[in-house]
Length: 417
Ligand code: UDP
Image (tube, rainbow, N blue to C red; front, side, top):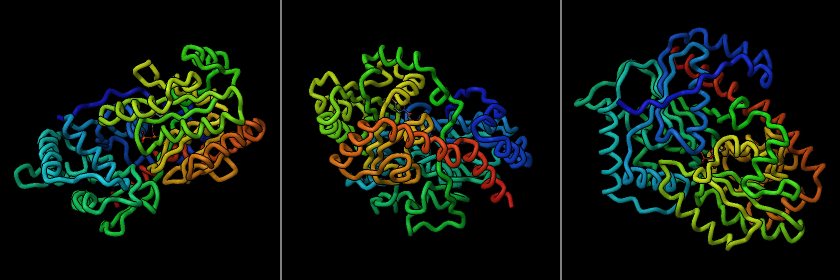
């Protein structure tokens, strides 16, 4: 058995306040034919990163809609997650070694996971490359337990510049699925041969502890506990410590912006995910770049930063950064916009779906531009607030979990003929 993730209970009714009554009624109608449908989501980690964040909402809401949805996490190991992090990096365009030993380590672990796979399902959704080959091994004669389920592969990463060898290794596994789901058309490799290739961007949960409204005194108190002064300007990035999130570039941009914005503080908050062995290394690189600067605060789940703290930090920030160099989507962008904060994002991947240039924030492709845009917003708080307000409405229209659920249900309907 794969590891079953304990779920929160979520009730759809209050989402009306954020998404509107029509959206909820439509969702209930879409779900009606799937009452009792057995839906399994499988990914690599129950904690840390956007996929875990998404599943923590989508699975309980599917259950509230009457589906028998579950979330299970595959088995891994330090060696396996080292290999899958290399796959992730290679698919996002990094030059990484791709040896036969690495391929064997992947295949062995996936065969083991296929053997551990249990249950009868109507829909199985496999998230990202880590569990992508489970279906292939289930279909093999020795196991032969594909069942009657429809299998969907959901890719959350940016494949615009994917390493060919690694993608070609993965492609046959992906192509066995009945459908694949992508965030943007640009991510779908030309070589992919599948009948159903579907575009569904991720979304944020407006009722999660991370995104619920918090009163200002509470925000102030949480910031105070982390030595952040809410009376001085704050720039914030919430991200795993990962090269694609460019924490060192954020520190460099902060230093330039601070010249024009006296008293500016930078807050870098990042969790350490169990399937991301590189986190500590990139934390140390950022710590080195920080060079003891008291106006730069770095925190992680190790300092008890959880959803409430992230919520407060995003609200306290005068401007939020997501200076990624590659990004599948970047939930943190919608999270900040939903809180009415403008976001300066790296010009890449799903960030460009969320930020409309000059309306909800800015897209940048260098440290200097990032610093200039940050200074521009920090010195014009009224404009920053107006952009944040636009961003909140943009998220309401396009990036709330209710829309994401409706998209999943439409795909189920399509696959069921
Ligand atoms: N996150 C968090 N604590 C942290 C850093 C990140 O809870 O210290 C959350 C963040 O709020 C977001 C998710 O992790 O919900 C990251 O998702 P995103 O899509 O931005 O990036 P990914 O990590 O999947 O590349």
